[in-house]
Image 1: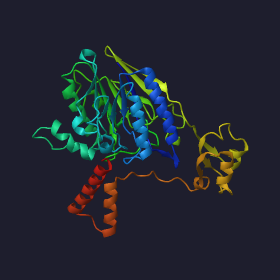
Image 2 (image 1 turned 90 degrees about the vertical axis):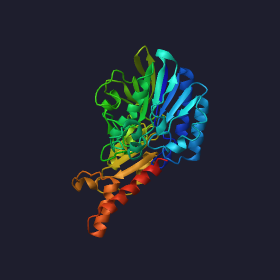
Image 3 (image 1 turned 90 degrees about the horizontal axis):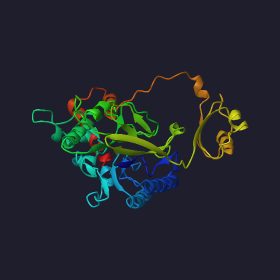
Image 4 (image 1 turned 45 degrees about the vertical axis):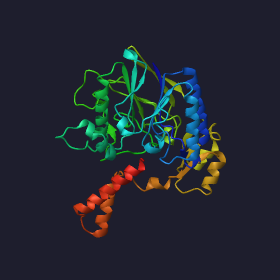
Amino acid sequence: MRFIHTADWHLGRVLHDMSLEPFHEQFLDHIVELTREERPDGFLLAGDVFDRAIAPTTSIELLEDALARLVEHTRIVIIPGNHDSATRLGFGSQLFRDRIEIVSRFQRIGTPVVFGAGDEAVNVYPIPYLEPDIARYALADEVTGADESPALPRSHEGVMSGALRRVNQDLSNRPGHSIVMVHAFVTGGTPSDSERDISVGGAQNISVTAFENLGYDAPLPRTIDYVAAGHLHRPQNITAQIPIRYSGSPMPFSFSEASDHKTTSIVTIEAGRVDVETVDVPQPYELRTIRGTVEELTQSPPAWAERAYVSVEVTDQLRPDRLHARIRAIYPRALVIRHTGFSRHLGSSSPRQVVEPVDMAEMFFTKAFDRPLDDAERAIIHDTWTTMRAEAVQ
């Protein structure tokens, strides 16, 4: 059986105040045409369909149109990512489960979308993005006993392991092959500047062992055949005993991705063998970065100066007169123009320390009150932040 694996569309995204909607329209035309040509058994969209929880109306219309065209050629399985609102994306999912499956509820974890039958069947297990502060309670009842903690560990590793144990409970009694869809940061992946940080307790990673062992401490007699991952925007394979792949975003969403090779993954599972091929995604725009003095940047501009969207770093020691006008005269699509020359002489700064919002709030109130917070005050801060995170993914 063959599947198209894609993710991280981020409909509604802007790039330094430039709307990407016209470019998304071109991509969606491409992905529909690819699906028409390939006629896969399934189409797997592994999260971050939209760029924000409350998506623009035009982005919703783009998705509706794309799904209407895609469903003519294949069955579709979608999970929400950390940018999506699971509730909004999942609206109507109980109404159209024949050709489109949107799995947004934790209660569905462990229940596969089955393609085919018997030993040749492929069981697709969708796991929506797991916000640890919510999922550790929502998944706990299914995986812990009466004498154990009522909640899973407060980490991405902990909640994903709980979800994978649910998958194992079902898979161990099913014939055929298996694919797990996730939206997560798997250890060994290479990020870019355009992913949102999802750290909890300073960590956002999930080990490959969690997937290899399906959430248990030791290997099992049977494991999954392929992990269709979303979240990281660079197309890449993760080194593991089972195939774990990020399809990547369809176009660059930051200048850190300027040289990335964007592709769509096509997965074939047959007779226990998994093959992954990639198809290039036509790039509707070009990103470039350039650095130098104003004279260096304007005297002999490159051939792509007028067509590419550019991030420009100007290194003159003193800020040049009419800096933006002079740069844009040569690079009319410059999205970022920074003067960094003077900062080079200020010396290096210490590395920035990442502080979690709960800790930052506690530090602020401690400073304001000139005393340590008591347990009740800390509990209020923690509960408030937990509630805010829960509302953000609704």
